[in-house]
Length: 448
Image 1 (tube, one colour):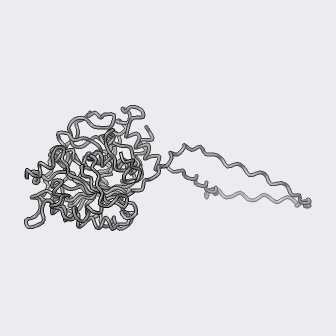
Image 2 (tube, rainbow, N blue to C red):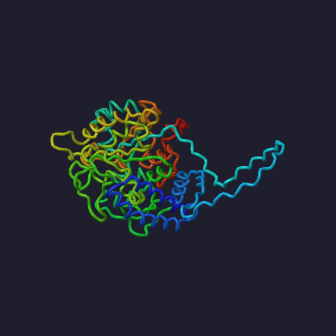
Image 3 (tube, one colour):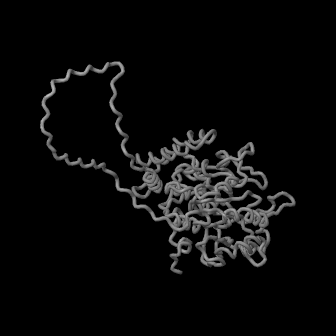
């Protein structure tokens, strides 16, 4: 228990060291509350079954390193006490004949007891993943012969692996985004994109897989996410949100409404419903969200070097460029055309980055269905229930122009990411029927 508390304390200190101003104040104010909740959750969890304790233990083990003891300083006389005068030397005796005495054997080094280190997990071939989440105009409109997204269908499709039967859990954005990063299923509030930014009711229970029961928007602090897992494994993550800014229209991190209030996004601008990370106290309360959930404008600089590119990058356009009809300025590309233009602007930068070239994977996914597209009966008939939208994987580890007709969904994306980064599956991603694409990407697929 003390080790778990120390692990979160160290994460809080590390986050505080790189925060300034308003974000530092928020971190200081919330850390004690978050740590208290985490400690309470760990105390009430069954031994060996707490995902929080497991994560904190791994975090502490990864950050602990043996250090050599500092040399003791040489004693120096006190300035208040003068040094004693030397005693007179006795008369010198005649020197005795020199004899060569054997040197004493060297003392054995003192053994310092250490705890056995956990065996290192062999990293997989894919170490940098970029996930772009858009609004789907329907499978045929995205990938068909008469696609309304020509860059995606004609330029990118021949370079990647198409997931023909990738489907969503719901038509709205928030339930699919939350499932993708945590394995939490849709509930009554997330299915309507959480019109009010409210916590889950106090005392909400979780299943053995960590799935929180009931309806709510902001998950309790003990509910873990992929981002928590990556931090615990000493890996880096960033969410890049187009147009994310504070009340004064200045770029800001982890922007979300005040508790128990509604969001009123500007047409075509940033919306928290496209950003699942601020819906978890595990990321809010210890500074991970305020540190890693950043404006899209930071992505280009981060792509320049492998060292500055996170292991996992979640990329979301604003309400216009994500592909929702009626959100763009008059005369500009709208709906699917706007989303396609966003891809044509950013995907070449990702594909040219050193991290992608070395060990990268780009996932072009759809995290919601464009409500305007569903107004077309022909599109609505092809989307179906659950909504079939498709997804595309680009990497040097996939065969260009290939197709995979197996059933996948947001739980599958999470399971794939966790398998690639050697993490334990969370929530719905741990289901026995959830398919992972990691064997395909790592060349270990048996073809089943």
